[in-house]
Length: 328
Ligand code: F6P
Image (cartoon, rainbow, N blue to C red; front, side, top):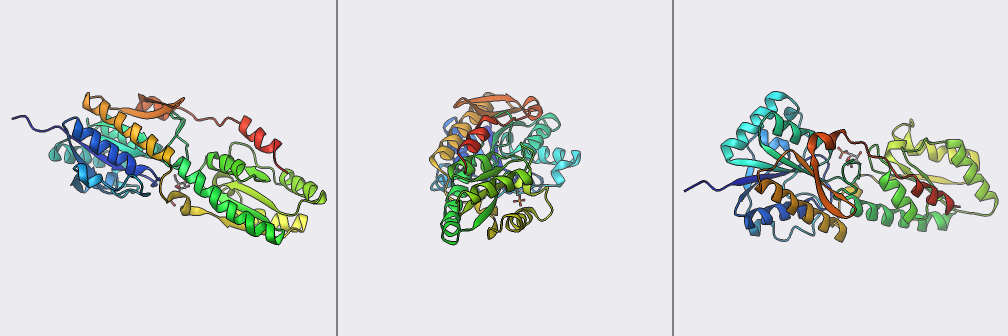
């Protein structure tokens, strides 16, 4: 009797709400396609160190609603060398894994590309990162949940800023991308939003705050993307100090941090993860690898992994203009 075809699934890089929903979809769709599934523990580390677990239908019950990833995730140095990639491919073959679904960001896709090209294991990437910074897709798993978390947190900050007539400077995640900052900023009615896609001008921001203050505005919310804060010595604290010095408005800085990576995924993230996971399995079932799955105009599509990695994402700045037009 021919051996059962088997695929693996791993999550890599920073975790994102909805990764569990993707794992569930991969496992169930693969089993329904007659394949076995191995979960790889802690991303590419698990491939190097032979850390695999069998995943059956019921092993992925009750995870669709949970944040984090049941498989664990990591950034793996050993896998960045050719020896590491070849060892990982060898371990896949020994375990019977013919193809792999990799849920993660660009760094994880580079690993998937190498494992396909050098190791000859078919890999399909699914975009999983709260940053929404992957060029071939309009949407990455975890982004919607992270934006909602940021929005809820800033809503809470607004309560206290308003009570004290203060200015609140809030840093949100996103690495070098400003998607969370711009959208969450609009959703909380921020007075000013700083994103890395637009040159940050401290004087422009101070001038706007001062002008609004002199017209009677008492409290302010300033949303700063991580990608802007990281280029300023002292980050948001520096921005807050400067606002207080120049305008006289009492100002506090808050870095939201990793809270944005957790929590139960929203409906958007659960559905995106499920449809992309399902799609990735259809590709691997047909023996197709070296692809990245993405979403374009709401539809699930796929791209060559090398081409996907070459693409550049460009923020639609018309949304920034909207934010600016409705602030203060
Ligand atoms: O890529 C997701 C992300 O949360 C970024 O927004 C942030 O810059 C980075 O990961 C933080 O990484 P770590 O969890 O390693 O501190």
